[in-house]
Image 1 (cartoon, one colour):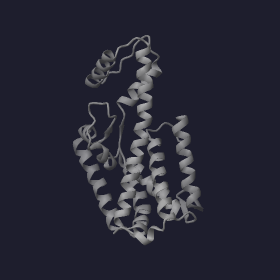
Image 2: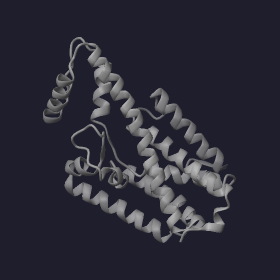
Image 3: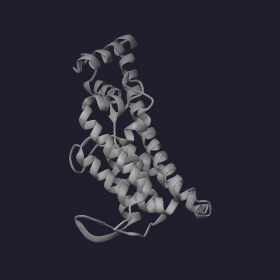
Length: 250
């Protein structure tokens, strides 16, 4: 049984409290605290942090909190409180950065396609404003639906969850304890951390590039998982290489 550390207790408490607040506030909580595309009028600067403590449903919260409990406590014991928090939030921000980058690429590509088709920027922004007010998506007859869908999916996207930060912890754990045996609920055979966590990274990369989900359609921000894992891996690799134990931050 993993001993839960003090900082992890606080993070768990904030996430659970935010989920209760979300249940009480309903959609308004997502409007205010989920991370919206920066061009969207619902975007606020505090969402860069608050989205990490928001979750879509009970299962989303349970899975992230379970992994935070299992791996976060080990990493806090290893790194110390301050360095653990630096890792956690840096991975979360790295996850957000990569996710928004790909949204921006999709938005700009589609936006340029609208311009090339003779649709003015004023018409595009008026269309987006009208959709925001009415909730009804509209399409130009001279614009392929997939292009319009790409523009809308980027502009109206929202992101919630601690997954990016948590996958940073997973990647850091795999660097620090690569041969630690881990178990899956449905596989009673131990798998080394570097293989299990590495396999999920490869799956996330496949799903992000192909758009295919092995378990069927799901609203998962795979680029955020990848971004968090990359940041967690790089930081832990650097600290391990430079003997971080001689410079623990308490």
